[in-house]
Length: 263
Image 1 (cartoon, rainbow, N blue to C red):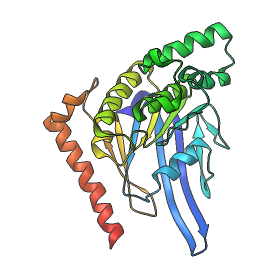
Image 2 (image 1 turned 90 degrees about the vertical axis):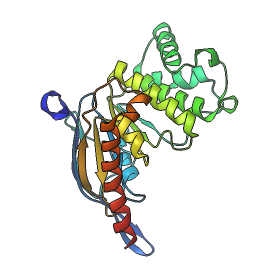
Image 3 (image 1 turned 30 degrees about the vertical axis):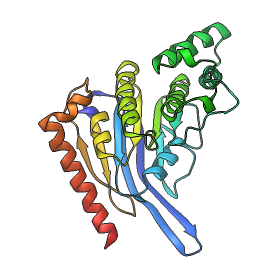
Image 4 (image 1 turned 60 degrees about the vertical axis):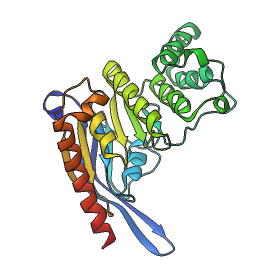
């Protein structure tokens, strides 16, 4: 499987995160260990409050662990870096910049000359199907189009790791399915290391090579499920008996944690 012949890209080593609040300590993560390999697509699922987003923020360098370490290519994460591109559920676009300029903003970190930057910007606009909206501003775009811009901007930075926190969570069902398909096509072409958080078990199963199931708080890794359904995958893949079996198994494990949380 993924770890057999690919280089180690991200190492999460015994990560603990404790928050201090007015009502005392909250242990968000309690000893998380995970190896993610080069060009691997990993999805993370689990009940609300299990620390999925906290873990992503620590990998991104937006938050620091209370204990433990995260390494990317053997170098410890000590803060944010353009080597780790992040796409959030909120589109986080610059409202005063056009589609083209929002995407081009990511290229600033690569130090490209103007001609090369223009070529790269065009490439990523075409990749997400927005070349004809180059001059449009975020307020003129639908939610799905805004998220396409955010994904293109993250890709344009040429990050070593793409971190995605519920990127399709605020979209309607039809747009969500469309963007899942587009993300699959893009990942198969670009072969980027992806760490993708979702509440949607079906989404995790259609996208990922491995699905990480987290326990109820305090967050730990309960199980890692290897997805043996070959790529390319599409929406018809969701009808396969093996896909339904996989989805139902993951859902049963997540639901078990949800019940534990409510006890």
